[in-house]
Image (cartoon, rainbow, N blue to C red; front, side):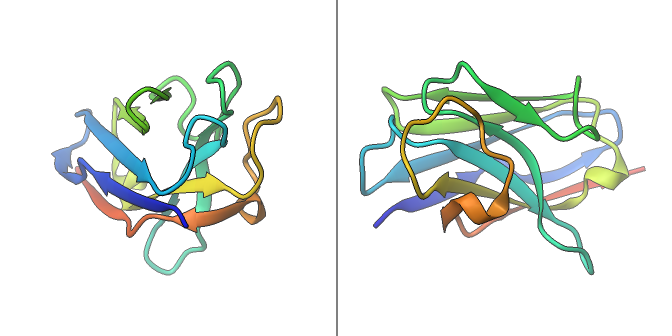
Length: 127
């Protein structure tokens, strides 16, 4: 089993920044792709960003490119999401996720590739 715990959400004004962190435990973290997804009220959960096991491959949704940065520290079993220039459309519950299969060369944007999920952290951006 894998346990994922997100932290760092909160309330911020438009244009501001937040940094989300996800701490993983329960299996070898370093070999698995990781991702951040978000779900706004009344909408489906969508991919925000993802990173492969080594950190050399990343994916960003078009809506966050240039504003969000994903990173991972395999020595600390953490994956982070730096969010800058936030806008009200970024308001959602953000979820950290761990992929089912290890390794692979690419970051994974498909939600079906992920088996393990954190409890989510709320991000609210006010205008």
